[in-house]
Each structure stands twice: as structure tokens, then as C-alpha cells.
Image (tube, rainbow, N blue to C red; front, side):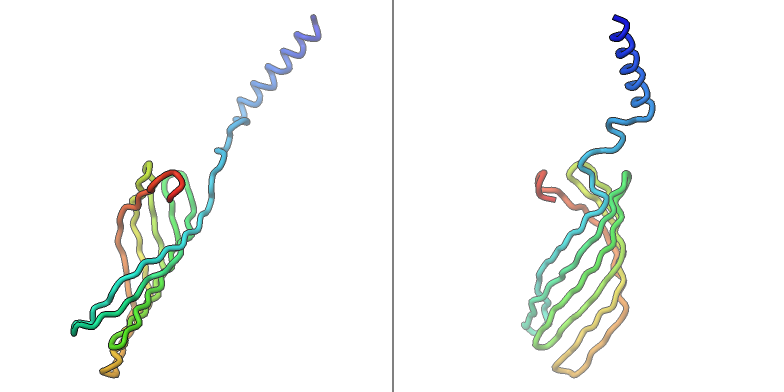
Length: 145
């Protein structure tokens, strides 16, 4: 009888000690500290005289997941090679988003270099390009981010 009381007292003390230090679920399970994403899109650049050029943007994002918001580093490369006009851009910058259920409102600021080449006129121009904006991403489902 005395041994069982001693065991109960020890187990109760150990449970109280664990609860005091927050053992058990001190950290969430299945959490991500960082994530990487690759994206792309395509479109047409109209040259104004009936000609158009197909082009696209590819990029990647590295995101650090924090409690209140998710800051990320982003790189975008845009290419639109055409017979009359070609465009090339490279942008780097930061993006901040907040996850609210399936919605991800965000704001981003990118800066980079762009070149436009008028092949028929033999003229090209390059400049520093600031790009800023925002929007809302939407998760389609649990497994589609």
C-alpha cells in the first residue's frame, strides 16, 4: 500500500513539473520554418503594328514563416524576345504576406534592371525598374497552396 502511494505521488510530481515547464506540446507539430516556391506565367507583348511577341516571367520565392506574418525574398526574370521588339528584366526584392484562413494578402517591393531592344530601328535602352504592388493569393484546397 505504501509503495503505491509513493508511486502516485512521484507521478503526480512529475506531471506537475512537466506542466510547469510546458513539456508535452511546447512546440507545434508539423511546422515549417522556411518554404520555397517556383512560379511562372506567360503573355503577349503587342508591338503596336499588328505584331505581337509571346513572353513570360519565371521566378522563385524563399519564405520565412513567422507567427504574425511571412516575409520572403523573391526573384523574377522576364523575357519577351520578338522579331521587332524584345524585352528582358531581372527583379529582386521582398514580399510580406499574412495568412488568414485560405487567403494570403501581400505586399511586395522589387527593384531590378530592364532592357528593351528595338531591333528594326537599331536602338536599345536600359534602366533601373522599381516594381511594387500587392494582392491576395487564395489556396484552392488543403493540398494546393
